[in-house]
Length: 119
Length: 251
Image (cartoon, rainbow over all chains, first blue to last red; front, side):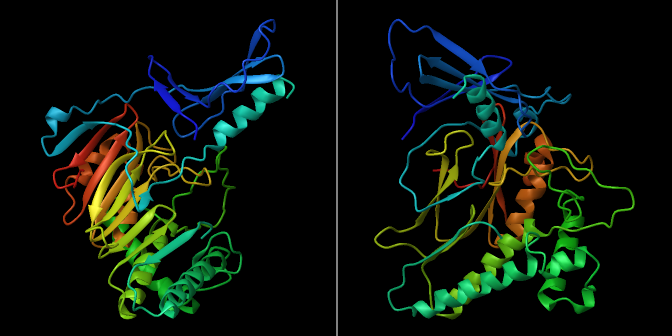
């Protein structure tokens, strides 16, 4: 099962997917290749791969969120809503409700990056 | 409808034929309503080859409910709104016939009807999952409740929340499996600022439409969901906070 970590430097959201697969030879310098920025519902998605020798050592997806809306929602102004921070749980469950995130934008950008790296 | 549907019945004394009947119903719905099937009533209606009066009675039932919901959601649930393909561009030639896509209601409605088939067959403990729309009744022994996870928006193997349920419908709107985007029918563009909306309540058809509408509202969605009667909601915003209604049963 791949591990994913989410960092949140402003203004982009970075999703790091996949572990480093092979270290490759110490002598080979790491090269990064950026795929095109492809539009998605969260904003443009860009995949950046790091290649050492002939191996992909890292894959990163960067999402550039769209401009923030002119009115911000303050939870204090909406006492009828409860506010929580998004957390990840690995609970045992019988079923999942949700739209599966199969991002075609991610796949397109990944293909572009692989092409640039001649893979 | 282009997505996998799972039916899990935990009653030991229910004839498996009952589950077959539920799947027969779901296949009928797909053949009648699928916008991907050129021979479905909906596709033929959209091409002008079929008049509403000539369509299956269930089509009129569904379209009637869709119109009620369009009014109830201030137009944010609107079957005339296009679903954007992954490329994000939709070109509608001038003079093109207005088409409808009721799939935002049909999915939940068909599952709710399938649940009634299971009920009629004597099942009291089951879970139906149709591409993320879930309908449960009873429990899976020895557990006292069904445990339903709400998909984490970024991490596929994690959940953002867990619900304990005995008799409940759960619908979530977000990015679709096929990569199509829900749009705000008023602007024709995807909403911004939110990742998903989950609606729970007694009827999956209504929950499905409410989830679609609330998602289309974007950042104004949570406020609208707080006014719903009989339904609770949880909205995951793009800044990774969650706004939920007072009665949403967090675990």
